[in-house]
Figure: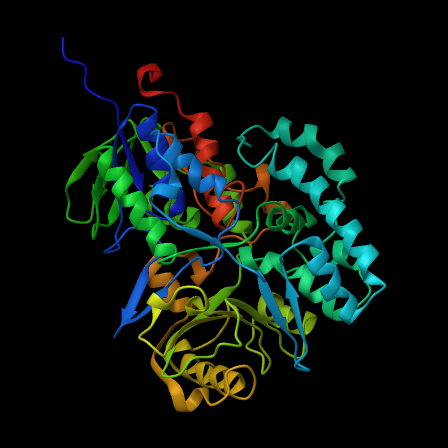
Length: 497
């Protein structure tokens, strides 16, 4: 008697999809991973322009143990394939009055930096760190990798969530501990790393501060693309079939059960298990017949509040800027007003804030000799705003280049080369991101845990979801943990019925 191996198909090869494929293979499934892009990685693509290299997606590496776990599934070690280098500082904050604050290193290093700005905030920082650890101990250690498909689990956690003051915003949490406006900005900025407004994002995401303190901030030599390539080779060594340049047209559902896929070329792929790493809003609105979408899911879609959009500029320079650290947070003149314009009013401000990535500070292979490579990210409204990016993109790019030229990158306009950019329109077309959002749905309390799109599809058997739009949320640690959640939900191949 011949037993047909259990077939699992993963849609999309972002980090959540890659991690899901590897975990399914370790559970004994025959695995295919299918992506519409020419290379693995989802948003972690790599762009090369005349010897200037750019990581297109995530550039901040925290919680490296989550990366290590995937190699350990196959008795291998991450360190044998990828070199992670710790960074100090983790970030340099550059304020509009040209003062700076270096964040990272030891607690003593951070306290010394705080002392330069507001000595009275040193004790408040210590208390903030304790509170962040308390959130981390519950929300990350105990809850980030468990399924939230049962409402009663959410109800049972309410007392703990109240004790942690999860009803307050990240800004509110930080402001309770710190008095200096600059330090309040610096220590409330983390929600923007996962697409949230610090003034409305639940303080549960305050755990990011302790997460960075607990594990540090790293850079992978060769960039995030080097991590993707290492996972590609790991998948190939373990007979995971990789199919690129192929889009999914529909998920085939029979009697409430996902049984396969129809590809854009009309061919069909059978599957016992399907994991979608696509944006859940795109999945449920475009890849599943509406009759098969559960009412609860339709309600979430109707009420969904999406993260901000991103304007990302990539460029090289024909000179080096040795005084610019690996990660810089360049803050504009306004903070709350700017964020309100982005998230609430959905208009482009004259002011802006930036995340600046200079990988050549650590890895000179990203640019020709004597040159630098840069990636500049600017939070902007998503496509629910009435903005014509075909004209506004170039205008905003020029404003940003002007601002950098006058501040931390002097003479940039003379030395910039090989520049190009992406807007929310590109995120929509390239990554099928609903409304061009940079991080799927926003990390609000009403869109967290059970209230987020479930890791196990509601009303459709054998369909699971990983990635930014499901529990626990966006960011590299979040999407890697989403694959751990479905690992708990999906039986081993030999136990599948």
